[in-house]
Length: 190
Image 1 (cartoon, one colour):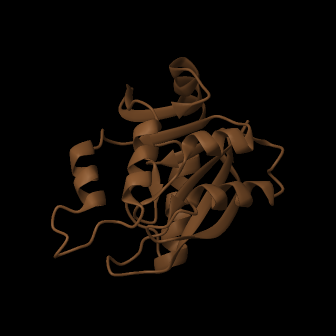
Image 2: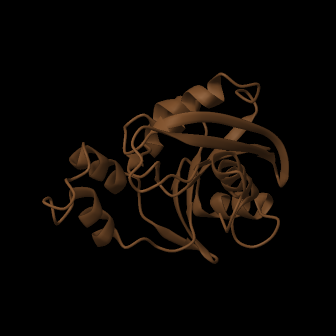
């Protein structure tokens, strides 16, 4: 079972432009490959970039599921999880350590203080993608959103791909690699 987990590289708050996107391909808990690409900070290209990265790789036929560390990468570059699942023909599982404060997410997206920081470009469309992604559900010590798989299958997928801690290896290694490539060293938890 090959699963790809995507995470973005760290970037400075004032950064504009492209951000590194890393895909860690794992067979259960063994790292089998790494894919890299770029997405625009607060852009709209995350879904297309992920599809292109998988489809142009040697793993295109082998990937059986996609995992995301949250529903957005590179700030507010929101992934259309339903389109990602449909286009690749595999389930998508969004994994979060904590349930997000959706009111705070909405405030950040639309900006309560436009004089200080303007709303994120395309905020209404991005908020619709967030709302359409599905309910956030507890799953052991993590929270998930899922497309194309039951909660029991999501639990089995997380169990099969987690070696230590709570975060599945595809996401953990993507996080470490993205940090190492961007800053010269990996840091912290996925």
